[in-house]
Image (cartoon, rainbow, N blue to C red; front, side, top):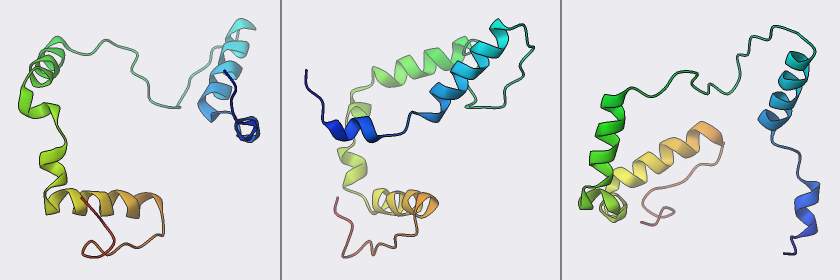
Length: 97
């Protein structure tokens, strides 16, 4: 498969590089304490797994359309945008469901 050469210009994902450095340090015998990405080091509790499974098997949860038809979706989109960008959008004229 041929990939765009633009992909070669992308910086490596930071946490991949951090993981490589951590593995290197541990291999050298260092006791590394990480405060990184927040990956859990314990299994997900069974009640949570069961609730996720039940929710995933409930057909009304299989579609985002009910969210996309609501003003609530537009407001959530705008809140998310404000958290990562200085971009300002008008929900009445610039956000489409």
